[in-house]
Amino acid sequence: MDLMRTQTQPAPLWQNWARTARATPRRFASPSTEAEVAALVATEAAEGGQVRVVGAGHSFTPAAVSDGLLLQLDALDDLEWVGPPAADGSRLVRVGAGIRLRALCRLLAEHGLALENLGDIDAQSVAGAISTGTHGTGATLRGLADQVRGVRLVGATGEVVEADQDQHRELFEVARLGLGSVGVLTAVTLRCVPAFTLTADERPRPLGAVLEALDDEAGPVHANDHFEFYWFPYTDVVLTKANNRGGDAGPLSPVLRMVDDEILSNGVFEVTNRLCTVVKSLTPKVNWVAARALSARRYTAPSYEVFATPRRVRFREMEYALPAHAVVPALRAMNTWLRHTGETVPFPVEVRFAAADDVWLSTAYGRDTAYVAVHQYHRLPFARYFRAVEDIMRSHDGRPHWGKLHRRRAEDLAPAYPRFDDAARVRRAADPEGLFANEYTDRVLGGR
Image (cartoon, rainbow, N blue to C red; front, top):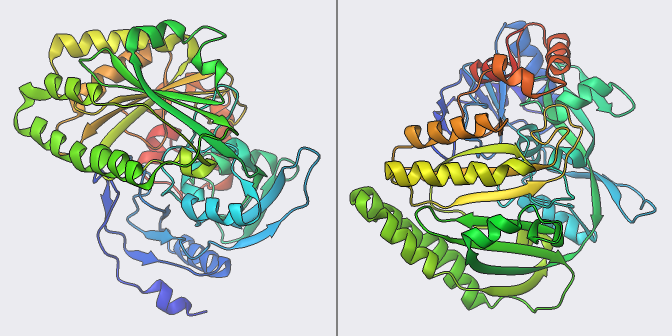
């Protein structure tokens, strides 16, 4: 173990993917073992410093920013063990917390396993994804943190602690979704299901017809395993995505995948966003052209290939979790504001769904949830648009995604989470000196 080499690496400027957060820590380290992590944490604690962890940098907030020690855990990516099958065919799998979701999905596939649900970006580390509340879509399915059955973490004195639903249960609750505020995750135990295929059915539909059917028990949200849609502002067209287990629609043609996912969704989309940046008044027309250019496609592939979508156009994002019944009035209010202001928004609005869960700081805690995500091209201003949307979401009891842009603070977030005070108590006990805190965690979780 070359700990001294790890400790004394130069600290370069770090930026997240969206270029909305940056830091120049005193020390940057990429430990290759849990023992190195523990030694680094203990040293930083003794110096009265600060420790944060960075994965792929896909959080839009400054959650990973540190002026002390910044850890990158990419080397902690081993498959530690695969447990025996349960009665329902699921298995527990323990992996290093630094493994990227993309690599994890492929590794699980080699063992005939898969994650039950997944978001549409698979670049994140497992630790980062669960700690910020990453989720997918599916009215009967929960987010990634709910699939966590145990964690191993390095605490504020450098000790290694195992936590799950039977031991250190309260610590486990905040460790699996708590912005890394109680320690450095080094390993995660996940409940995985037998590998499965999904048949994807993607097609444009009228916005009004989709909104009218959202609350219908026989509508698309409840009739499909996974349902989401993308709405292009200034149009009455949405792209719906319905993914269901099984089926035999055949694979997607490599040529069609290249045309749709790379040329249109990334290459041409980059060009149209740049055009709207230069000539803002063209945005409604560009969105209409984009919406009318949408074509239907249907194919079957392994689940993780269907869930994930390549995203190469850089953007900023805010996402709010609403009570499921509130999504239609919220979207109608957004539509009214956009048409009244003429705001330049060439990015579609994304709407997804999830079942209620009991993870303390989950945005779906205690209620069936609809997620509304707004995006803005990185060369365009986003503040006015995001403020207006946030005001609408707050009026409908919305909870912001922990890893995406928002203006909320602990004092107004606490009433939205029944277990917020419990999470704060656990955080104070686990990290009384604020070793794992930074300005963002103090703002949204409260100071100690």
